[in-house]
Amino acid sequence: MTTPIIAFFNNKGGVGKTSLVYHLAWMYFDLGLQVVAADLDPQANLTAAFLDEDRLEEVWESSNSNNYNTVFRCVRPLLSGIGDIATPNLEKIEDGLSLLIGDLQLSGFEDELSSQWSDCLDRKERAFRVISAFWRVLSQAASSTSADVVLVDLGPNLGAINRAALIASDYIIVPLSPDLFSLQGLKNLGPTVKRWREEWRERIPKNPALDLALPQGKMQPVGYVILQHGVRFDRPVKAFQRWIEKIPGIYREKVIENPKSDNEELTQKQDEVALAPSSDPNRLALLKHYQSLMPMAQESRKPIFHLKPADGAIGAHIDAVRLVYWDFKDLAQKIANRTELLLPSSQSSLELELKK
Ligand SMILES: Nc1ncnc2c1ncn2[C@@H]1O[C@H](COP(=O)(O)OP(=O)(O)O)[C@@H](O)[C@H]1O
Ligand SMILES: [Mg+2]
Image (cartoon, rainbow, N blue to C red):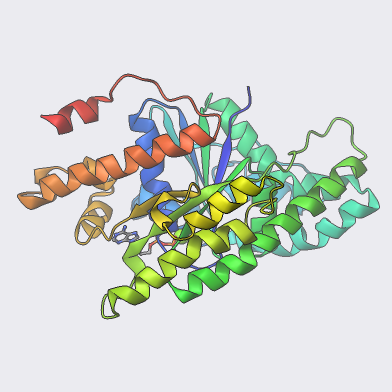
């Protein structure tokens, strides 16, 4: 069975997407899965969450061009026009948790991805090699680590890098903040993703290279995660509630492939859901503002649910840390149920420790 590739995508920045991917990667690792976290955002924030500056400097400054240790270095041979992708050299965070390191230079791939997209229609082999590059790098990363899941962090835009990353994905999860900007963004995101899926499926049969495997463009929407931390609390709670209530309808209309179902009863049921956002089946979680726990976790270079008294998690923080563990475990399980992910049934050692 192939490893599911799950992309986290929102065209508005600062909603908490990278923090979400980082915590989920750790959670799946804690639950016993083999995890690859891939940083396909040229801003490389996910990479900076995992690695300290000394390590980052060592990787990024290294002049050995044959060390394929960032996503950009893996696709660089393609850019020269004569080579193909190189097998990624992943950063081992733990036994069972690996990182495909991001790279600020990745933005240099944007133009090529943009022009090769139309060349696919002209049945050009190189165009298919370029457009499928991320998928092939991610697939190699998954097979070299026998990964159970690949989680992909993306930058907040509708550019060609994200298009190539999304057609490489089996599943898409949308992190959202309950505000006007995020909802406007969702209205662009949904139709754009649908169009990319269709355009890719139209291109697949034009691939002239029989030996070149391609992603199938599954791109199945799994649901959305509401991230509350970006909400301005100087605004009335009612304003924020208003956005929360609008999300189910907009998501269903703009993101789901066939929102108009033939099943009258189901459609009616879905309309009722609009009245009760918390029971919307597309809503995977609502994550709170974790206050000082987030900077504490960043400082310690750990997920919040690994924080210990020595990291500053004392007193009431200890209970808060536990709640964050359950937030993410619950979310990880929901995502697993909707993708092909099988979670080991035994409790993680961390969970047993937290229950003490
Ligand atoms: N649940 C949360 N609680 C508190 N702070 C958060 C939370 N999620 C994200 N943040 C903070 O918000 C900022 C933006 O988050 P980030 O994950 O980088 O967003 P994005 O990837 O969408 O740009 C970061 O400083 C991060 O620490
Ligand atoms: Mg980010």
